[in-house]
Image (tube, one colour):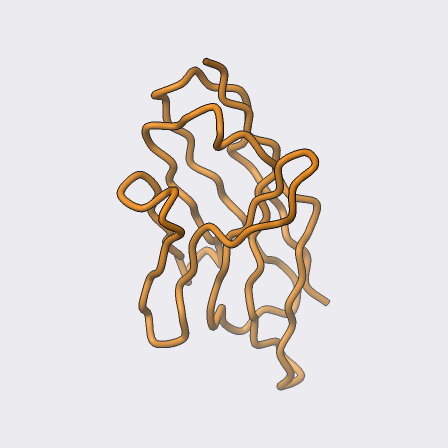
Length: 120
């Protein structure tokens, strides 16, 4: 029904930047809200940033001031701009949107995620 395709992950030196993209395709009508999570090896998945239905953005304290979440409704794409990256930002990153689909229902899902590795 909906597929999520990630891009933008990779290896970067400490202090560098990456922009993660998560494109939704299929029966997409609109993206209602978005959350970005990350999961480091041996750790639980944690919420990094979100855009609520009302358009409010919230960030985990650990990324506040460094990460920016955004969406492009025309492209059905969600972004996470990550600046001043630190080794502790190393993780697999996932977007988790709530999407309105053509049949009138909503869909949420993870996709495969994208690996971000920050070297010191």
